Image (cartoon, rainbow, N blue to C red; front, side, top):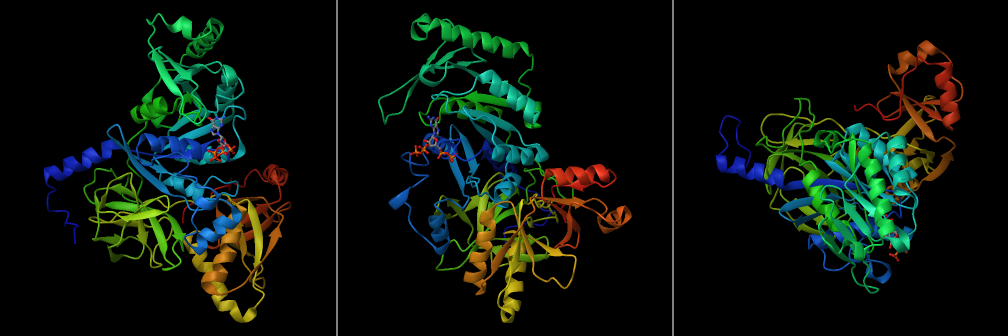
Length: 542
Ligand code: G4P
């Protein structure tokens, strides 16, 4: 038992060690649309941390990808990566936790939930494509949580859109003010590097032979070599554009950055490894260390000496030999130690955490300790649910993680009535675990559940797991809805407005009404007809 009664003072050395560990830590997730270069950027970042030895190690392809479980088998069939992992590496005196969000088009609620564990986000944008749908959705989740956003505009080595236009798009469409930390000189074939806005140094990109890393050369404003190394017209244009940006007047106000209102912006090329190190250095300087988190006791400081954390993701069946489940816990306060006994807030039970794991890609190692901002994997004998709090010392319970707006809906049919019990058990357990949202018809004679998901993959995973873990086959019947809205005031509010058109009313697992719409047009129609109804895309936390 490592927790101590609140009355026993914490030795100063432990307090100092905790404070040092917290101030050293930076934790972030990358938000992007598939193909923007997330895997490539992750790989380059890890190379700097010495966490991997060679590029290509993150995204092992083809034969290289080992099939380690049934679960992986599903990934392999789909050729995608389902398991989101946490990558920890040290760089320049900092410990960095990269919470990897699944990047495929078929992303799931897990992608959103990972953001609940992140203190910072890096928004990766393809310079040729600008903002794309998945990035916008993930950005909205960051905005809800007021997470600081760092923008990396990637693929500058390829012909892309005008930098001013890209900045304008982010500012106008996301309502996010930008502060370019560097400015590109040329683009595509004529991409020469960037101007570092704060030092006014030129950071020049020198293409290396195929297959080798590009080089970066830094030239101070006083360096006479500047005009020889870059075409005057490109430099002039970049300087003029930067002046325009500076004329806009905003300052690099860290408070605004940390409130998620102002985004430091970087230009670079992950593939050629240009601008990645300057980005990482500036990120470490500007990003926020692990911050206080809201709980039923008010904000909990990471320096609270007792351990606390919450479950933000459950992963089932990663290892077929054990059919185990892993609960991913984000440490929020204090020091976590192996073999610690902690309280599980929801059940009030005490549990000993004897096999905590740190996950790196598909490898696992046992962790001895962990600090705020870190993520640990706990074997989950079925008692953990998304949002659960674990703590030592005085009772604390963190705010839950909301249900994110589903976009795909389908009846889940059970073709075999004699398997009803297993079917219901499986559906309930998978829902509790957060694998999928479950809705029901308001007509009690229609007992089959409606699965509601953020991505198609979630539905397939549910069917796969029902068969493999509960021994029941199932059939999906897609429903033609694409939007769900929860209603403030619940059933009484709905009764007051009377009969509704253009939508279907269903109930969620907590018996709250949910309205399903086929499209935006139907939603707007209902809002026009009933402005008194207050609708929410994200379910209030239960
Ligand atoms: P994702 O994880 O966001 O889906 O993207 P990923 O890193 O897999 O990158 C998608 C494609 O974009 C890859 O090409 C990758 O090489 C390329 N890419 C990433 N960053 C840059 C960049 O800075 N410049 C250029 N020109 N290309 C970039 P691919 O052909 O799909 O795959 P691969 O065969 O290169 O791995």
